[in-house]
Image (cartoon, rainbow, N blue to C red):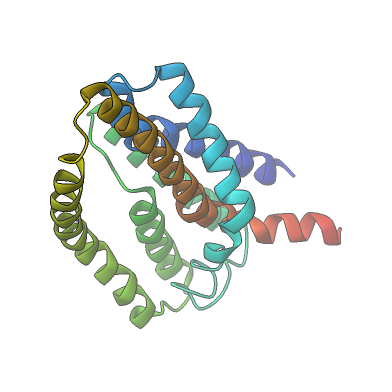
Length: 205
């Protein structure tokens, strides 16, 4: 029971560090441009993340056990080591103002602990994940350049600056909320999947 409570506490701490490190990416642009207040952005970010992990978090719940690793951890100790590692890495990155992907830290620590425990690693699955990490920034840069050109041409038709500013503000707010939703469905869903075996044990008892 002690390990379960400790691991759940570390999970909450990971989510707090995630909010400090990754969540600003959702609404940082909106707040910096003055489209929304910091308090409103924080509330919308929390709502978006909660909706994402609730509605679609299960899609990545098997990324570690049955994905990167061929089987679940045999005990709670490996999960504890993973959570401590992630908390240390994310806290250090936040302290030095470095944006760090929780997903990368999560998968990397899972592989390290899995090898230590003796669980086989699905290297083909990992290479697919790793390839997505490498290609995503490249595709994002190309997509952003293309979308910018499209938006630039479309905004030429709007003559009133106030109208254009209003459209930009609302569009940025909606898109930022969706980014928070994806953060919940993707990253937080990945974390919640690690706790599924713990909850299943509690229910069975």
